[in-house]
Image 1 (cartoon, rainbow, N blue to C red):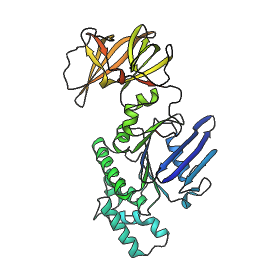
Image 2: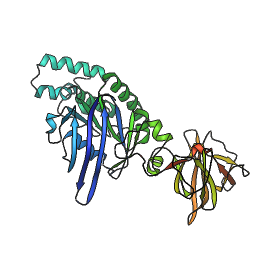
Image 3: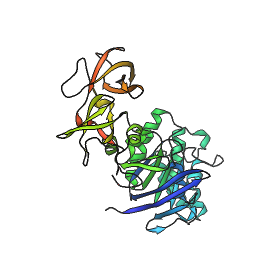
Length: 368
């Protein structure tokens, strides 16, 4: 077991009639880069405000460095936050913004100057000390906000969608810089985003949140390859969801009957014939054929083509409950042997059909 720096123990918070957090628990190890990923309103920011001390939980404890800080004031926790809007003082230059907290602590001017210069070097802004925030680009202002948060050597750095206001190219550049900076300093980062690309690119672990709960916790690879719930499967990457019932178990495969068509899925521990199941299949795992193939094939019709970043995505209509279900198949390259309106047959390896939403799926802080 590693060095646990933060523990969230059964944190719950309710606003009026809404449960913002529903008894979440999590252990965070020192030096981790953890991203909380989820849609707006899932409880991400409320959780960060509770960790920082800006919000008090209705139930549960926040334990920092082995000490219960649930009732501790924000200025008595060695936790700093970087916000999306930067929150820089417009009347102060860069040096004054970065060194402001040291000035409040009564640190000598020479030491403040030296530490500010070191921070500017760290965030690749040497020579910017006398500029005002108005004369900086969005990426430069974000670097100043990060330097200001880091100058006190916090135990935790909380980042609340800090790259959300940047354009795509700059956002990707800052993702790389943030990850490099975090590894160099060894400071624990807790990062909030609704952007799956950010989460996948930067995180040691991802916490997928939904409606105040933790859907799944794991490395980017674990959550992508082994989603525990249909929500996690669809929120990260492209996943097709099928509902059916176990028809037969054979070797490592399970035959699933769904809307009178048979598909294959992995054979999970404890799976039994006639058990209702939900299967998630990534779009890039789906194979397309002109004719039915041995084993199983799902019949469908190509409805749409979409091109994105060198990847061709085809939307295929297959029989579903109450009508037609859309299935997304993804392939490298810009050409396809199949055109809109063509009849196709789909299949995949049994291991590509992941059983999700089963009883005992990891939620609410269980480590993946």
